Image 1 (cartoon, rainbow, N blue to C red):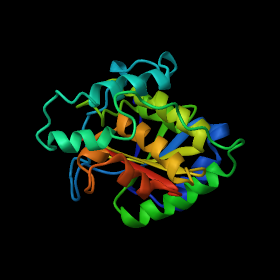
Image 2 (image 1 turned 45 degrees about the vertical axis):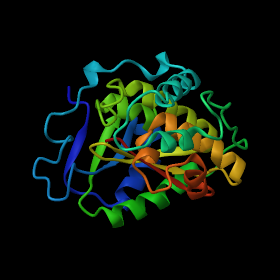
Image 3 (image 1 turned 90 degrees about the horizontal axis):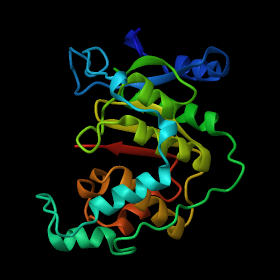
Length: 243
């Protein structure tokens, strides 16, 4: 059984939105899928056989807070060698918190309008990526769809996507995040309840770094949590890229 149904032609945001509205009855989560590179004839990984659902565990088997703390501990070791950053730059990333990941930021409850925000972001993404195709995955939510499809975007850090799904599930609950689009090694979420203060954004930035260190290590300079946090205050979309 194929884990993913893939359209042959580019998808419209309107169709994506209609399928999202039908998810509660269809059980199929819609994804806007981007290829490895513009003009990629194989449309990797979606049409090239590079999906491995059988290799994944279950998102329910992992505690998101434990995962983030474990990843933070691994990526904040100052005795590790990273060609892209100097020691001073590595220290600057973790300066606000040191080696201990802060407690997760709490969202305002309840989170409303998440699907409406996802629909707005789908229109933006489809306009910016006109060659993206539609994917349908049998999954309870967008976070689970990443694992069910067998996507391996963060494989250079961990090849069990269920761990990343567990964290995204938690963001769905706390921030009204929705998985809208996925690329070869990119993930694009809409967020209806992003942090609105500098303090809250800094806590979320720490979670983002643990989840996807390349967002900061290889993002815009300066490579600091403070600078990254400034960029995500009030942002209704979160984008991740793993090298």
